[in-house]
Amino acid sequence: MREYYTPTLKNRAQPSDDWIESIRQQFPTERTLDEVLSKKLRNRSNPAEHNTDFSDLETRLRAYLKQVTGQNDIVMENLHRLSGGASKEQFTFNLTWNQQSGTRASEKLILRMDPSESIVETHRLRESQMLDAMWGEVPVPRVYWTDPVGEPLGHPFLIAGFLEGTVQPEGGDKASGLGMFFEPKLRTALKDQFVQHLAKIHTIDWRSKGLSSYDSPQSNSKQANEWSLGWWERVWNEDAVEAHPIVENAATWLRENMPSVEKPVIVHGDYRSGNFMYSDDHKINAVLDWELSHIGDFHEDLSYTTCQILGTPLEDGSVLTSGLLSKEEFLDKYQQYSGNTVDPKRLFYFDVFSYYKVAVISVATSSRAAYGRKTHLDAMMNLLSGFGYTGISALQRLLDQA
Image (cartoon, rainbow, N blue to C red; front, top):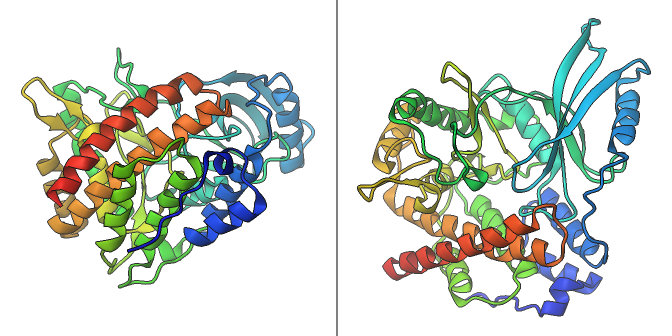
């Protein structure tokens, strides 16, 4: 049995260089994920709380845009902060500049910027490259500029085109889109598109795309799953405020029962309601939030997307996947559109994995970010920690079945 790391609260709150190196060795994962997680730990000892005063953001952003475009006559207007979102600071603004075609154009853009610590620590270059890879394949925003270091604005960021549309139906007030309710007519219009886009993602030849910030796992091996589990094991051991035996038992079970991945595919990592947008004619016009994407087993997305805790409960006791369709209909349509055959045993493995990931994000990282006052959403992070304990209860039931 694997010997698990048991760091002290002091190590987590004020990690030393030796401790950071030891946890890196204990839980290997992709090199760019290692980079952002190590950076998070090195910055954690900084006593400064997250600064929500962006009074100089407009000046710094305008200077960056002049530099990156090489144009002094740009016009930047209407910088506004967006509400919502659980992991990144988001702003919109209008930019007029001379584009590569030689024409002068105006466009509304969105700025996604890291807080001091996020509910998920991810790499802006990875997100940018994946959006570029999806451009022309499934509907996504167009990325214009990315800075994964973040010196110009103080935090890593990317700038992309802003797409108009609806994420939550009128009257919706669900945190991060969880448990969203769609009227039956809207479900009928959206559900096939929702499944088709995921099927398309899983059938794209990722090796032909410019994904240099992603490590390429070997086919017919456990490597992709080892990296994926190692990612969340590491986050748990870095962020948990206190130990929890169910979460730690789940990690042991996941490692001991890990399947091989015959043909790795692009995994979105957070495919659900709240992370897609639709237009007035009920067409999905954007698949959003690619920051958790990686190369792995398509069952990982299927289990996460159909996870009951993320679904919409109905009065008859059933649960709709992302508020759109039943789990059975979702899986049937997925097999039809993708040509992939769903393996129930592998799906169960990733059911355990999905609840494990939910527990890590909600119980460990959200509490840690709020505790250290390193986020602009500390109230929401505390709320999500309670959601995570619901996930742990479901995780225990799955382990009992196993």
